[in-house]
Image (cartoon, rainbow, N blue to C red; front, side):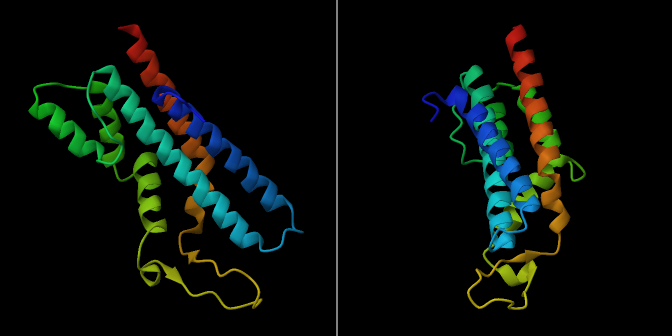
Length: 171
């Protein structure tokens, strides 16, 4: 496990990549019992680690500017506090623009995480017909295709992190 928070975003991306491989292996292996449940678990775990990498990266940039970011507050609230203190973090302002754009990958990734954790499952899912009484019941989302974007989200997040790290390294 990462001992320093600077390595946490890399670690979380590694875990996300691990789950992307597990998703591919599970999709290819038709002999897996409860394949849908296992796929859902891998997909949600991958999404969890992608968001963890995102939050750890925000911490990394905030730390570079000597600002405290605990990972629990939204980026918008964090930047509002920073601006109130008379500071600016242009790299995170660019990231906030991505997060706020409804047609952007980052916004869609975060929205899916919110839907996955929705308390009222009836609001976003349909009941599945019972096929096997011993099977684990899995919530089936209407927007199944959203999980197909995990690879793209991983690539986009990794690119964004590396580009901003390059910018931070120049000064």
